[in-house]
Every structure is written in structure tokens, then in C-alpha cells.
Amino acid sequence: MAHWTVERQGATAPAGPERVGGAGWTAAWLTGAVTLAAEGALALVVYFLAGLRDEHYFAAGLPAYVGYLLVTVVTVVMLGLAALIGSAAAVLPVVRLSRWSARRTGRPETVRRSLAACGVFATVAAVCSGVPTGLLGGGWTVLPLVLVAAFLGLVPAVLCARAVTVMRGTGRRFGLAGVVSVCGVTLPAVVLVGGLVAYGTGLIQLYEPPRLTAAKLVGTWTDDQGGTLVLRADGTAVADDLGARTAEPANDGDAPEQCGGSGSWTRRESPSGTPQLDLRVSGCMEGIDWHSGGTEEKPVLFYWIGDPDSLDRYTLQRSSTAP
Image 1: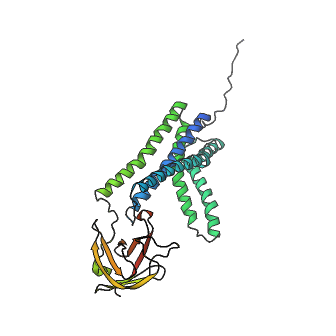
Image 2: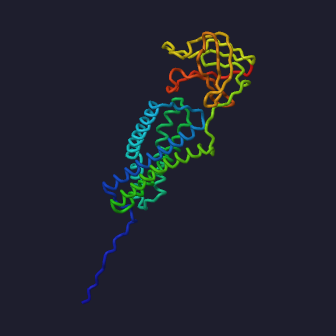
Image 3: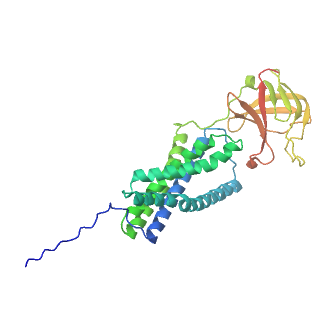
């Protein structure tokens, strides 16, 4: 008697994403954190380089340099901590959401699905932050801004973390995390060096204070507290309620509070070649170095209050070109 053997064919399900263990998710978490930190560092570098085109002043001297170093170290540490938290709170949930939706629909987990998950997360974040802000009178523009910022910030980190989860082998996963780390550190550094070179070679114009001629100095200059300084073409000057309002007595070399009177003015060049105002008003503004700032369209006159390294200054805006 012949025996026939019939093999049962099991239903073939669509191939789902590979199950990732604890080490794989750790590598994905670190990769997402490094990517977020790199994005943050790149944004800070671009913000710094763009700010060099606008009016800016840097303190000089050893204390100032030590302060800059401390600020840099604190910024790096805070950026790293924020990236670790952001990767755990946003990047990994988005990657898991993408993989969960793939399993639920029986379809492969793809880059497009990851992008859709980023869009869902960004939409929820925008609604949760933008709607309360709009209802409280803060404006509805917050909603689209948060939506775009969250989506653009999530996409690189999510795609890098996803690439780690789809790789086989713990060593390869951590190797990719290392490559992302190196690229994340290199990119902001390259942009910073490239931007400084562009400024140094004149390819991008660095901010320079306006070169005010004697004719441009003539006019009425006012502060934001009612003080005025009138500079006339004949070289005479009239000050009224001029000077920084401070709670403490003025130090040597500082202007007295709310002084006034008549005197004279001249324009001179500073040792660095920038124009300065030499103002002589009896009992007011004596021994003060006035500098020019702002732009050619909206120039200002200012002097440093106390130590210039404090970057605290008293400013006058030109209100007219004729007294």
C-alpha cells in the first residue's frame, strides 16, 4: 500500500522588523542623543556666526576668557544632558511607534513609515504647546513653528537611531553609533572654522561700527529716559538730564547721574581707528570715552558703565540731524 505524506503549509506572514534587544536599544538611544546634540551644536554655531554680522561686543582680558571657557563647558554639558533626555523621551518612542505600526498593519517598517511617525509626534507636540499659547493670547504662530522645528529636529535623530536597530550584531550597532558621534562632532567644528575663515577673508562682511563724520554727529541724541544731548555744527554742545541712572554712586571715570550743562565737542579717532566723540560739558560727561555703534541708518553713541568687560553701556539714539 502506498503511503502519501502531505506536508502542511503554514501561512507566510510578511517579514516584520527584527526584534531588538537591550543592547540594541541602548545603541539606538546613544545614537539618537548624539544626533540631537550635534543638531543643537550646529544650531548654536550658526547662530553665533550669524550674530557676527550684527552689532556685538566681546569682553577682553583673562577673566573674560576664563568666563567664556566656563560658559562653553557648561553649554556642552547641558547640551549633552538635554540630548540624552530628548533621545529617551522623543527619539526612541518615535522609532518604537514606527515599528509597532508596521507590526499592526503587517507591512515592513520603512523610512517612509519612520517619517510619518515623526510627523505624528511633531503634530502632538505642536498642538500641546501651540494651542494653550494661542488661547492665552500668545499668538497662533507658535503652533506651525513648533511643528516644523520638532519635525526637522526629529528626522535626523530618528533615522540614525532606526539604522542602528535594523543592523544585525551588537558590535556593528555600536560601531555605527561611534561613526555618528564622530560626524556629529566634526560637522559643527567644520562649520565654525569655515565661517570664521569666511569672515577673516572678507567673504562675509563682519560687523563694523558706523564711521560717523562730524556732519553726521550734528543733531539731537536722546536716551530712553528723557535725557538729551544736542551737538551743534559750531562745536558747542548742550546736555540735559544726561547720564546712566544707577542705584550706586558713580565710580571714578563714570559719568554722574542726570547731569546737564553747556560745553563743546569734537570728533577724534581712537587708537584702533574708529571714530569717537570727545565731549566736554562742565560738571558733566568729563573723562568719558564715547563710542559709535548701531548701523549707518540707525547710529548710536554710547559709553561703557564701569568696567567695559561687563558689557554694560549707556546709549543715545539720534532723533534728528539738526539741533
